[in-house]
Image: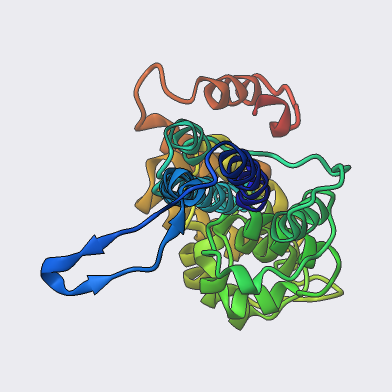
Length: 338
């Protein structure tokens, strides 16, 4: 019951009590406190009946106000917890890690624990949300998920944040970032984006850029670099030592080395190609297959046969088969054996 309504009801009730009491007992009474020398004027008996009603009213009002205040505190706790839950959901949408919010009410504690430990993926077509802050987060997240560029700076997200990585990809796809922009500030971007940028840079960028950022080397990027040696466009001039430095960044197997030789066959002069694989085979046994392929491809039969003569019986069987056919005057392309 509202206090104003209750007060009005009590006032009406008190008037009725006063009216009835006065009509039943119209006499007066006198309160005399002689030992204190206090003499009060005579009052109607009906007023005496009204005093308990007034005292009950005052006590009731205090009781209602007290529990109303407690109720307000409880409601305020729920409102605060709801605000925290909205923030927690926003952080989950932003893919923030180490989320932890303290909730005061039991129901929100359970829900808060759940939200703090799950990932939420926003649909690109989100319904209307009344909470302005959460609605703003949803809008930005939906834009990023749909491939658009959004301004995420105000959220201070780390570079390895999933949403930041996607947004940087979107910026790269939208040509807001060039390959060299990414590589020049590689500490600001994810390794995945830097690797992608390096692969793109390997097609046209200078040797300085490629050498400086070789930590992002990929097999595709290496093939792009090799294909530019002595090319008509975007030509690169690389010494064997520098080539070896770039190649050694990757963990390659025998097939990879053979592929490298096949790419270099189109542009590198035979002498440099042979020397390159001689040096590579000294550093990595996996490169021996590439060295053998190079020698046979360049019709260097004697040198290749010498290498095979010093191998185990079960090693390089494909090249030994090719050697046997050559000895029988059978001519096949070495590429058929790799």
